[in-house]
Amino acid sequence: MSEEKEIIPESTAPVQPHPVSDRAAQRSPLRKIGCAAGVVIWVFILLIPCIFITLAVRYEITVDTGSAPDQRLRLWLIMESGQRGIGFSNASVQETDGQTCVQTDVHFFLWQGSADPVSFCQCYRRTPENWSLVDSDPGICTPAP
Image 1 (cartoon, rainbow, N blue to C red):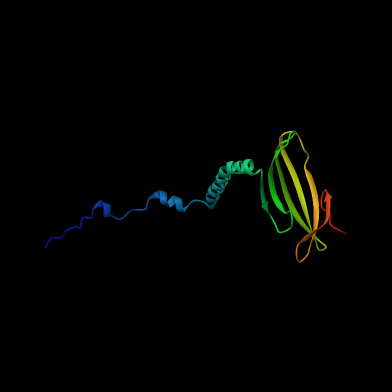
Image 2 (tube, helix red, strand yellow; image 1 turned 135 degrees about the horizontal axis):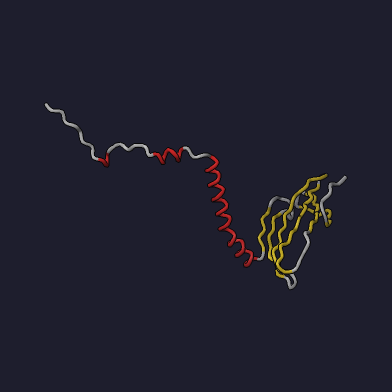
């Protein structure tokens, strides 16, 4: 009896590990974070035309940031005869003595005309049915003594 060697065709031969796949397993977490940050930045860049199209059609974009009245982020288009540009407002909340004060800061980015940043404060009291305006002042909210 003669011993026969089993011949395995190359297509079914066991695959040897490839050095490139070993490198992929050894990638640093910092590289993965960098790739994720790059994807987030790229998506944001792709959304910029959508923001401008929405502003051109609706003239403003608002996003509620809380349950208090007028607590929202707002971006709007300014198209006045002496001023042209974009307005941006952001609201923050302060709770004092049963009142909720909403501090709104407004900034203007104008390419025609000029405007200074503005801040104003509106204080509300919550009733079971709704919110009622207690006080409205230009400037920064100051806690009641």
